[in-house]
Image 1 (cartoon, rainbow, N blue to C red):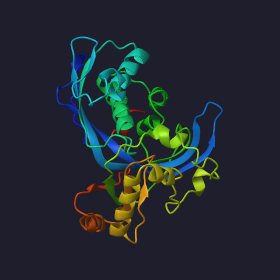
Image 2: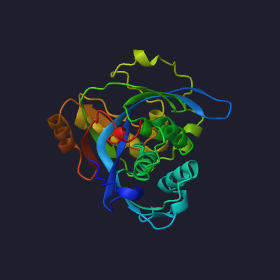
Image 3: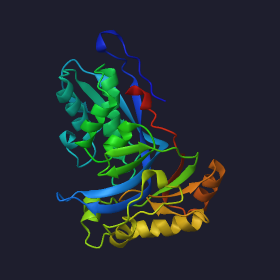
Length: 293
């Protein structure tokens, strides 16, 4: 649940706090490649209740400051800082902000952590700064930051096409998920650059997709290049049977789907000790869906 208390004069409370949820790719097909090198995808985004949490504090100047920089990532390169500055530039806003991020989503995990954080910055600051930019405009800004950002701004579980910008809402049944975090970060660019990656999967119409269509064209490449991903898939498959374990995004995280919290908890207990893993309910929509129109 978000906590914000907008005050008069376009100011807000110091405890403004907003979630940035994880996503899973229930389907991921590479159906072609554009002349500029970008891959054409078809994917289904599912939001989870498991999330980073972003805290925003107003400043007396126009600076954007990240109070919790990631190791090895200069603050000016952080997607959250870039999103705030992009919003300032697009709106002419001269308000500043301090951003503090509670990270619960791993880097290079395929859960959309950085993209989700950026989308939450766009949605939250558009609300807190009372800018009134429509959702479509925020999605356009988000696409300049990364292909997954528009899906988080869109706010619905979605069937996505193109490079991720063409979105159609999909209704998904209540489900629980066990997610395992392999001890590696998988660079998305290296997976898409692999010569063995299949790039000609047959496309489908969004209306024809069914929840049992769950392939991921990137999984075999990630497993070949990062054995830890393959090992975690093997361990989760054994613990989750008869549920099928699969990879999300370009990796590294793998997941399995269950019909109840009890089934997910049982599979979590069957995993070998030492694996970083957790269970989460799927979300019906992005928790900040109502902040933009």
